[in-house]
Length: 138
Ligand SMILES: CC(C)(COP(=O)(O)OP(=O)(O)OC[C@H]1O[C@@H](n2cnc3c(N)ncnc32)[C@H](O)[C@@H]1OP(=O)(O)O)[C@@H](O)C(=O)NCCC(=O)NCCS
Image 1 (cartoon, rainbow, N blue to C red):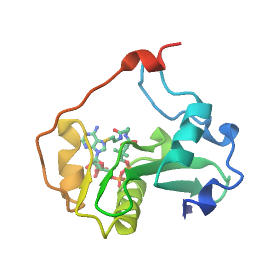
Image 2: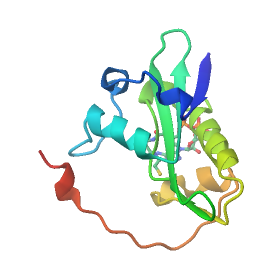
Image 3: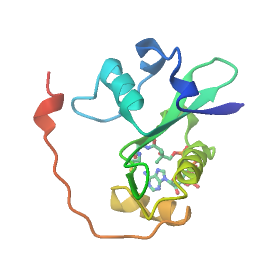
């Protein structure tokens, strides 16, 4: 069974070890668990998916926002062994519910994931981004 826990309570007692299960799959220079933990703590909203049988963190989503008008969802990931069971969709539904008072909630994704987000009520937009990959290099 999967349990969902939201910040701030979800982050109390969360450690780097809890985040060492293989997140940031395929990233050439993945953020360390310490950076991942700092990201979760700095986010306006963080929601974790926990395997209730093992206590392991198996998925997460974050949102950064101004608290009144706009929010951005920078990261969503479910560990490979847990994908295809509705966890990613549930994380998105839960973070959107926390942001239901916002005019805009945006995220950037690869084209193949647009239908996944459209099924969750999102609308395809054009976008522009800046990436400073050097900050992740060792
Ligand atoms: C995207 C992701 C969070 C989905 O998590 P999940 O728990 O598998 O999501 P759900 O079970 O709710 O929904 C699965 C759906 O995601 C979509 N999806 C996931 N990966 C996909 C891919 N590579 N190509 C196309 N669709 C994909 C499909 O619609 C899939 O439906 P299906 O299982 O019927 O094929 C997960 O695949 C993941 O962590 N991927 C790597 C990180 C990532 O891409 N994050 C999104 C950043 S914008």
